[in-house]
Image 1 (tube, helix red, strand yellow):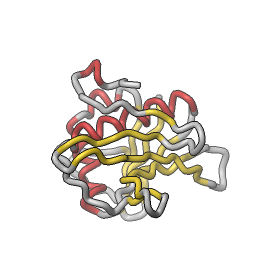
Image 2 (tube, rainbow, N blue to C red):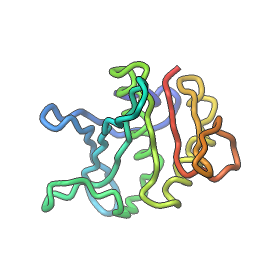
Image 3 (tube, rainbow, N blue to C red):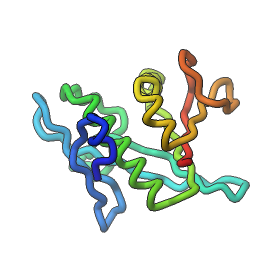
Length: 155
C-alpha cells in the first residue's frame, strides 16, 4: 500500500491488523523503531453521510492503547505523514463515499496537517475534496487559513 510513492513521497510499509482493524507501521530513526497506529473511528451523525475520525499516534505497549499526545521526534515526519496519507487512500478505497475527519491533538498538530495539505495540494485535490473548519463552520479548504479541523471526501 504505497499510493503516494509513485509521486516521490516516501512512506513506510503499513498494514491492517486483522484482529484490531488498526493500520500499523513502524517509524525508524534516531529514537529507534516506534510502533504507530491509525484508527478510523465511525462518526455517528444525524444524516445518511458516513464519516470516520482519523485517530493517529504511537502505540503504548504497557497500556495497550494509542497515545496521540506523544512527541516522537524520530526525524521522519514527512515519511510518517505520507504513510498516514497512504492509509487514507486505502481506507477510502475500502469505504467509498465516506468522509474522513482530522483534527490534531493540539492546534500545532492540526496546523502541521494543514501545511502538509498545502504543500501537496495538487496531488491531494486530484483524489479528494477538502474542507476546513473555522469558527465552527465548514468551508472549502483555503491556503493561509488556520483551521480547527479538516474534512476530506474521496472524489
